[in-house]
Image (cartoon, rainbow, N blue to C red):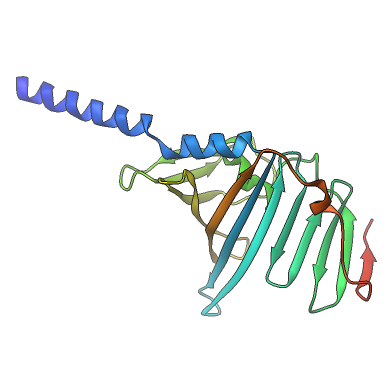
Length: 202
């Protein structure tokens, strides 16, 4: 019986220690404290229906106030707080819509606010991987479930894995993460080729 109690005590101590050293907490704190976060990443989309794997490199600059600049391959997505610009180099076109800033997170900005929109639960092994479940109160269109890994040495996002609206397996590999104390507002100024067709939506 004494051995049983000792074993239970050791397990509880190990569990408490693992939670205390939870790398996600430190990563989340870094993201929340930043005025801007710059990511470099690779998006890998696997379609079982079409048996294809598409890989796109990208960068993202996300401000705490909701503005963002995303470059995905040759396409650019910019929300300057007034308008959302979607630029397609292939179509030589810029689609201009009302800004989404102030309407909650979206498919871009939620990355810096995961704790707000998801219940984050650690897997026991490995300790740097987590299960994310969308909170019941969230009404915006985000993945219902995701898996996440955190880089323990840097306390930064490592990867996110989820299924998109087409049920394709999507993985975002984060190559770098830079938390900035201050945003450069000039980064969110629209700067597209003059030759691009501009389509303004209501």
